[in-house]
Length: 374
Ligand SMILES: [Fe+2]
Ligand SMILES: [Fe+2]
Image (cartoon, rainbow, N blue to C red):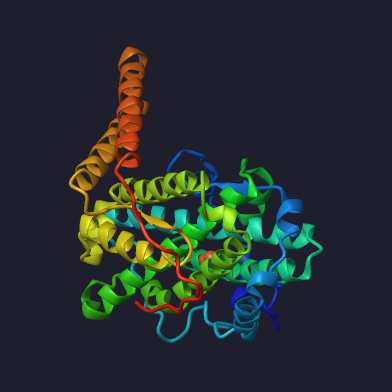
């Protein structure tokens, strides 16, 4: 029998990457899809925005950098990369310690949803737009995210799990964000994604004995894609100085605090996963914040003061409040109500305390473009 198989890694467009055979799991795992469907403050969301406003962006002020970045993305150095090859080691899923297995699967599902969330947003921008600079960029980014999501689904499938991406597209709730909020949030999530993956990759280069799954070997090229996506959003923000000045600096501070705080809380929900990697979560968080802050200086006029005496203790309080909140959800009656009220109030106070730590100001460099340096 001659079976034609296509893989998202080899696709050159987002449409082909989503239609590839590996995206269509034989096993449609209901629980995994349900996890991906959930919408809480801590789970990856799907976004929609004012596509006409985004389509109207004129990239003339950053033309030279823009053309160079697009040419680099079109050259597609990672074509064919995101699929299993001889470096993919066999994983004994049944032999994995159950707690680690559960946290690792949760990590993969949440990463797959986040990748796919980017894919859906970028693909929609490409579909709705008529500005060729913008549609070209979004087509290229959607292509990358579809490959990333497809590769994670390959890894999940070995554990007998798959996230139904078609179902998610149709049924998951979409959150509306104004274009400027999409820039801040998406820029940061691309750059923090880079910082997270490269930190794990470099750590495992030093400590290969902690590499308990082969997917980590793919993280360097992976995060280079995310780095380029972040560069594109930095250039988009540079086209309009108002986006990164005046009152908008308060919004930037809000998104920085929210993105860092969410990462901290979410990572602390996976202690076994981090222990297996040999990574201490507080060290990892600060390391990722430091890299992300250093990079985001390219376009944001402030960075958060992550060495402030209030920073780490307040993050811990935020994390504790969220853990208590999650515990209260499992209770009933008055205990549930009281636990939820107290947890939410303490989480809100902790967030406000983080937000009011004075930020560090600096002059944004004239030259925006950066290369991945970690
Ligand atoms: Fe991605
Ligand atoms: Fe990305």
